[in-house]
Image 1 (cartoon, rainbow, N blue to C red):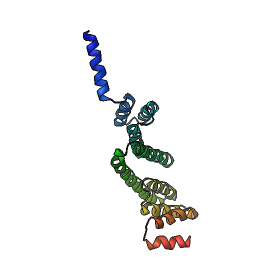
Image 2: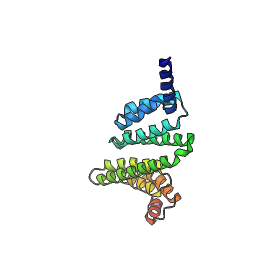
Image 3: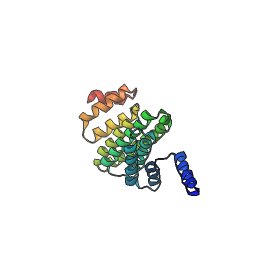
Image 4: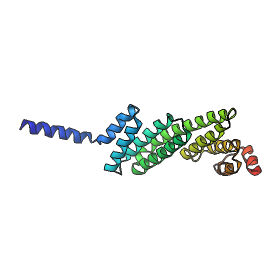
Length: 191
């Protein structure tokens, strides 16, 4: 009888905690910077419940931290895109997460902008830096699509990378987003 009461108590405590063990594992893995395992746990939580907003939020966190430590621009960009999608899905499922997600996206935007600026400066020594900068500034446009500055820097990076034709669209978008920078209009008309 006592064993049954103890088991019942344990089950009630587990139910009260209500945590998905996969999601809790993902959070622990994130704290330990084991990103691959954290993503596996998040995916397992999403297989159990595809409508789990917190799992998408944690997935975004994992990808955001993983991207910050990834130097390869192509892999980094893929992680940023996946992060943005995970955060967007989290908001769709639970609008109460909007403020937290927007704060995390602002931080990610700042980091992309900073990486883009550093890569652009490296481009003065090695022209490959300009293409890398374009990648980071493109990521910034994904994270804060209303930021004219991200589009301007994306366009400038493409021009310096020798891809002037591709620069037309981001510079045009910058004007649509409200840029009043005369140089952008002059450059756009020249292109």
